[in-house]
Image (cartoon, rainbow, N blue to C red; front, side):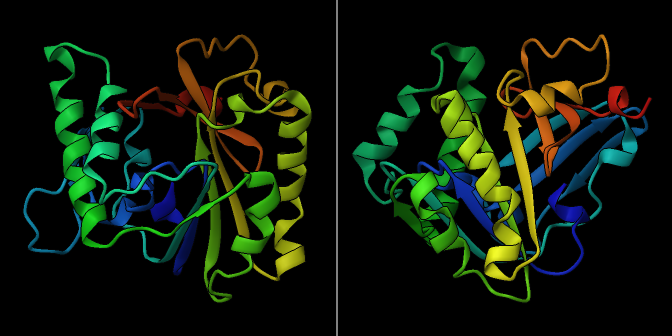
Length: 232
C-alpha cells in the first residue's frame, strides 16, 4: 500500500508503542503470490534486517518497490523506548509462547535492532489530543500517512467517531495531503462495515481501509493479505 503512493511520504502512527511499524522502508519482504514468490528489500548492505513473509491472493498486490519515507513519528499514551532492554523484554512477553512463534520473536528482535540504530520519535499523549499538533510538523511536500493497527478497539464508540472525524478533516486544517490507513477489526466504525462486500466474513482478520474505504482483509500478524473479495 505505501509503495503505491507517489513521491515522498511522512508516517504518523497513532498508538505507536515502540514505533517498530514506522520503518517499513528498512525491512525486507517476501510475498507468496499465485504467480510465484516476489521479494523486495531496502537498498542497503545492512545485515540481520527482519524478513516479513506474506501470502497474497493477487499478484498485483505485491509491491514492486520500497516506500520513500522522509519523516516518521508516532503518538502513544505510554511510549516504549527501544533502547530500554527491560521494556523490549516486556514486548517479547506479548508474543504467544511456544516454538511455533519463535520466528515472530526473531523478527521482533531484528526490528528492534533496526529501530535502535535510529530511535523513532514517539510523542507521549492521547491520539485525540495530539494528532493535529504532531501532524502539522510533517514536511509539507510529503504525503502524510496517518496509520494504526489494532488501536481503535481500545477507544469507546464516541472516541472512535471523534478520531475518524479528526482524520477526515486533517488535511484541510494543516495544509497537507493526508491519507488515512487503518487496520482494525470489523465493528470498529459503522460506515466501514456498511461498505464491506455483501456476505464477506471478516472473522479472524483485520479490515484494511484507505480513507475509510475497505480494500483488503489482513491476517492478524500480517501473514496474509486478501484483496479479491473487494474487486468483485
